[in-house]
Length: 296
Image 1: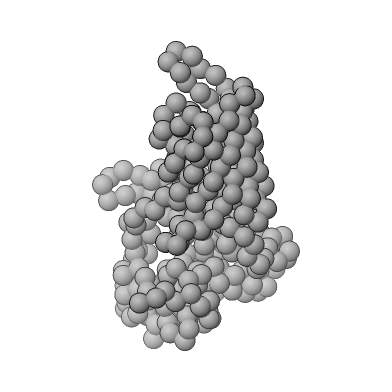
Image 2: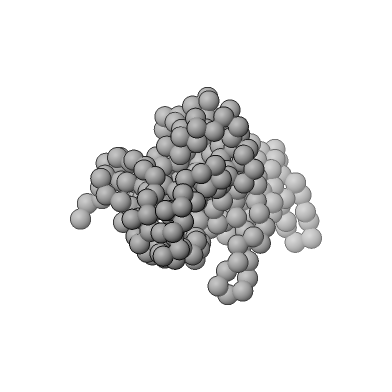
């Protein structure tokens, strides 16, 4: 069946005791290896909702309604009156259409309006949970921290999380509702698909962060270490400067340069980047990078 590309109609309503059953079920079913279940138990949650434990100054629970159907829930936990953390759970069938972004926008409008002392709405995303990272970014939240080894995993190891925040100043400026403008590279990774001209950086992998038009790409290749490119995205063109450490046997050299990359979308939905670069040593080249698709 063709994909439904309509923008979803999103509403929020306060959780009531009768919601306890589906919320507990949704908590289990929407959980993944990168988003742990909260651990709701239906009877206990019913009692908490009846007592108003999820509609007070420190905790608030919302039902998420997408296109008229209940599709998930959101929690806002306010620890000290100044910072509040958002936890978002949307069922698998409702994902991928921008609903998460709209939920965060609604939450920001309500909680900043209702709580004059609130300064920041925050949230975390597993380091490999690219969809959630992009949801935060699209709703005006900015990545401001990396919490190392903060997420216990099933195999006994720990993963890192990215920390995001929307400030009151961001909200007052309407940053959370800024219109979509061009391409969003935040959280995406690209691999080398083709070298058109110049040396071939085998094993090249680029991971992007984006804030508005400002873009940072961190990259490595077989003989390139600690690479970072920073630039401005205008429409479909990214102009940037880069620096990395080049290794050639026992010789190590810091390389600086600049480039111009053009973005376009393929028929399968993935982005590709046609990149032309030159460095201060006089070397130059052209290559095609393709968006990396990972499972999970």
